[in-house]
Length: 497
Ligand code: PLP
Image (cartoon, rainbow, N blue to C red; front, side):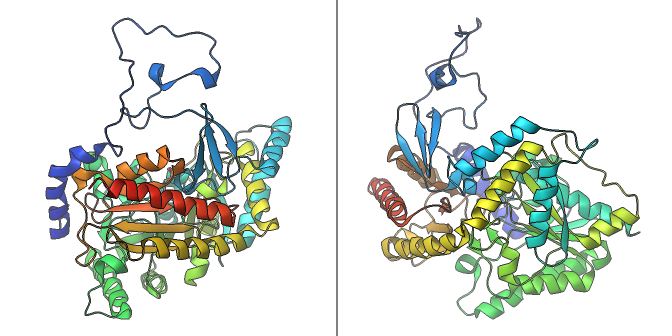
């Protein structure tokens, strides 16, 4: 391993101070009264799920110091808890619920599939929903993408992409190609391969000894990293030169793939690349025979206004990873979309991709995802994504554009982000110990709004942003309600500073 860069060293120092503060993303909230004792807590045997409260939970929850409300019902873009409180889903959970929570077409399609067949192991059978969904995606994907490898979520999609890239080069007689290059401040999932590809220091830090070696170059973040003395074109060229140098250092013949999110979601807050960046990346990858993997798990499947972000960038990647919006939360599903070049290399070689999970191409999941995608297409919902996206952006600019604590509003379609700062001119972030992001999340929830704030926007430890990713079915009135509740929640937190 190489010596850590100055950038990484600085981040590590900050990490020592702030890791503890950040280990929980939520502010200290009411602790669950139930404490384990040597004797097991008495459990009623036949509780209806809506009667089970957090206070006697045996679930290993995400955050062990949070008392979660119990969601019991969906109603369009709202979730309802067991006390009847309604929450406007302004972030789709994590950019998942693009059709809201009660789409009748999808629910009917799932019931119909269940009456026929829930699942058949893909080592024995193919199924109609899997074949139909693959055809649907392949016929709409960027040029060259013709085959779909189904999995159960985003991390499995990116993990599969990395292994597929590796096997492609082994099959092609270039086993020395093993280096993956990705970007700092990216997120590609939480399984070990995906986590290694990701460049978010906070997410990586405690698992670092378990991660395979991946080289990270700078993210494309115009707001934070473009020098005042540079034009956007010069900034873009600087980033492309950095990648080129990294490839040369590793030896172009040893590099297998470059992986990136075309619009960076969870870790940066809806940051698109500058114009020409991805075209430049494609050109560099082509020149050196390196595969380009786009992680569209969060930003893809219509979230930014077109089915694939690659189309907006005018490029055809070798592999695209999707999940989240693919099944819209009605079923867990993800997919690795693969170019014919890669497919043929494996078909004409060993004929077997040495990977696999039990639930590959799950029939129920594919039927749900197909119904989701057909509903989006038939009801022209991507036009609504563009319309509501423009409306949301205009409202965010109006409310927060001049706000002293909001440094930047960015995003595409219904994927918008606000970056919070303590000082607008110097772009100085808030002290991470203030946990601004977690406080806004909690306050918004109290006000009946789900939004997705996160810390560590700048380097994994410093910076705060709020990510918005509401359902594609949102109307004008709901859009206004989202902005009103967000403005109120932010102001209530800012007033305490
Ligand atoms: N890739 C990106 C860009 C993501 O945003 C995520 C999740 O947020 C993942 C991969 C991992 O997806 P999952 O949580 O479904 O495993």
